[in-house]
Amino acid sequence: AYEDQIKQWFRKYGQTGQVTETTQFPLCPGSAMICSGKCFKCGTHGHRSVECPIPEMSQLPIQERIWRSLAARALGGFNRANAVQINVVFEEEYEWDQGKGPGLSV
Image (cartoon, rainbow, N blue to C red; front, top):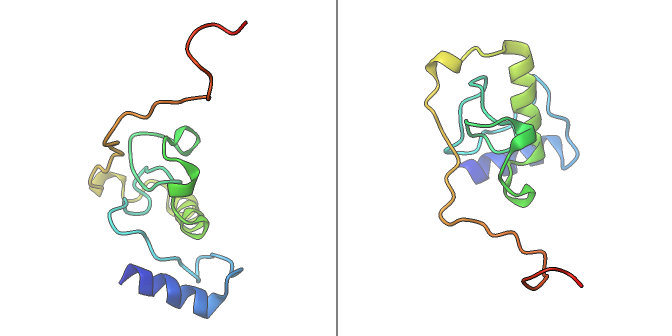
């Protein structure tokens, strides 16, 4: 259903359509409700957008991020007291490898 809603939105407003109060964008299933104090980039709780641990390629579509931001600006924390907590959970620990071997550089 979500994929169909996304396709319908783009058919109606186009690939460069602007998200506004009247052109609301569908919310990703499993993400937090709008105006609940969540991260705009991934739709979960427990961190702010500037601290989002989700890689950019896995974040919410830009249109949804804009819609969540617009709603939060207009309504503030309207749903914060009613929101179910949704946190990011990684299945395995990420290891940041810069491609360098072990030890000090010469």
